[in-house]
Amino acid sequence: MQIHTSTTKALAAIALLALAFSAKAGSTDVGVSVSIGQPGFYGHIDIGNMPPPRIIYPAPVIIQPVPVGVVVQPVYLRVPPGHEKNWGKHCRKYNACGQPVYFVQQGWYSNVYAPSYRQQHGEYDEDEGHGHGKKNKKWKKHDDH
Image (cartoon, rainbow, N blue to C red; front, side, top):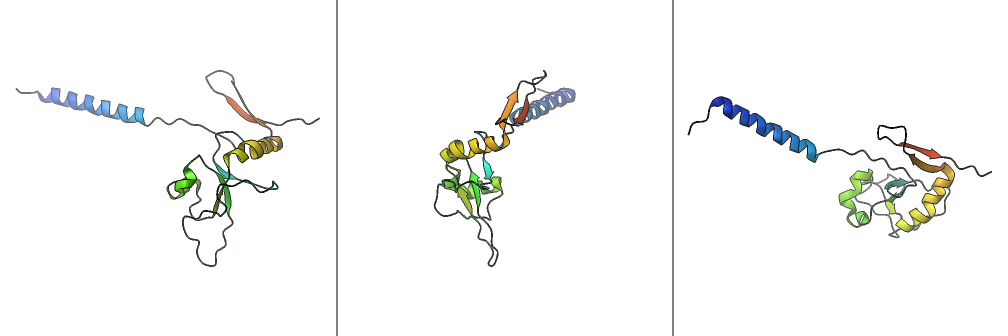
């Protein structure tokens, strides 16, 4: 059986298009933005003037040793459950491999930190916006009057 050159080229082009389409479909990026004080936020927490947080481990976790003579202040992080157990795998996501890290407890973040943050910075409001499927996201300050 002999296949014509034009048929072979057409089949190859179809195969390449199908491959490109499936690769594009599999790598769809969905932009999600979560701010401090919201339930889905993970990352650095600025303790500021708050009382010390409840932490998961009593000593900070350090993945990469700090050079001798260099003082690095510990950071407080909220990470998804389980990330602290395998911190070497996840520290790069938080840019925290070379610093001492205290992991804050989920309950402390939800019940103490987030409400205090929202009190100081306002409530994060997500309304339906003005058409086109877009939502307006903004911090709404509370009036304490």
